Image 1: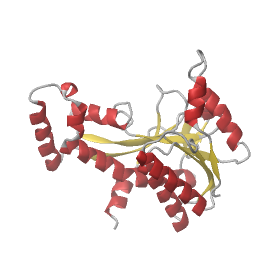
Image 2 (image 1 turned 90 degrees about the horizontal axis):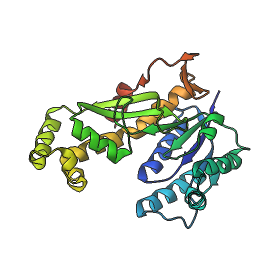
Image 3 (image 1 turned 60 degrees about the vertical axis):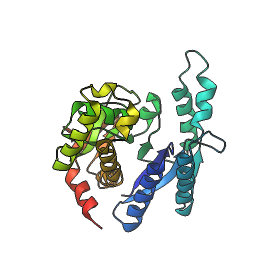
Image 4 (image 1 turned 30 degrees about the vertical axis):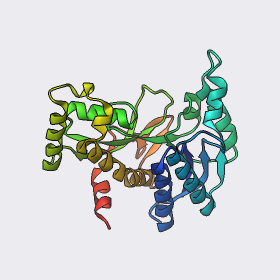
Amino acid sequence: MTLRMGWFSSGQDEMSAELLRTVIHKQRQGFLDISISFAFFAWEEGDPQTSEASVARRRMLELARGSDIPVLRLSAHKVRAQYMSEPGRDWRACFGRQLRKTVYERPFELGFMDRMEVDEDTCTRFDLMGLYPSLPDGPRGDEAEVLMQVLASKAKTHGMMARACVGRRDTVVPLTFCEFPLDAPATRTMRQELEALARGRPLSQVPQEELRATALFRHILAAQRSRWPPFLTYTLKLFADGDLDIVNGRPVANGLSLAAPIDLTRAVDRALEQP
């Protein structure tokens, strides 16, 4: 049976548009047995945005409308601005209530959350999953924060995971993961260049602007971003084929609780090797 999906996105940058484009393409190819019931975009006209977000959001609207995917919109910025000034009010809970009303008449089995914050109640009512820029046992934070910790720890591998959304920021429920090595000869040379830049200082004392400009930082970032689209594709295929599910916020595989997150490294590497 075709998996009905809800697509939720904050439209932060070009990767948001690329993920949607890739999934639509794989659906049309027949690789993913899914239908996208709607695209819920957490922004509206007039919201403040970067130039990158502006381009990405315009492209996402074009992708959705060109694929006859109904577009639903609710500004997270406006809801946050309205409620954050009121003591004791959680803007995410308010946003979640309005979100649920918006999608109420469009049922779906799985929601993909593209860097959107929602409350625990919404996560309880819907089966939701999202991507995270770290391995299941890796550092926590946003993409830049994680990469800084990876550099500082001299990790030999890095990667990403898909996780069930449970609404609690301190709780991670991994579903799948993908990793790549950081100890190849080329990266060892980059590490030496990084250590020369530090000049004996802990990396935490090196200005972030200098770290971001290093070859190693750029290499890890590029390796990770190239893997996001195929990683999401293969994760969704597990759901579409019935090999993975989320039940009451917990991952289930073949009717049993998922003992460990599923390793998609080989599948993603093969996808990257294809022309």
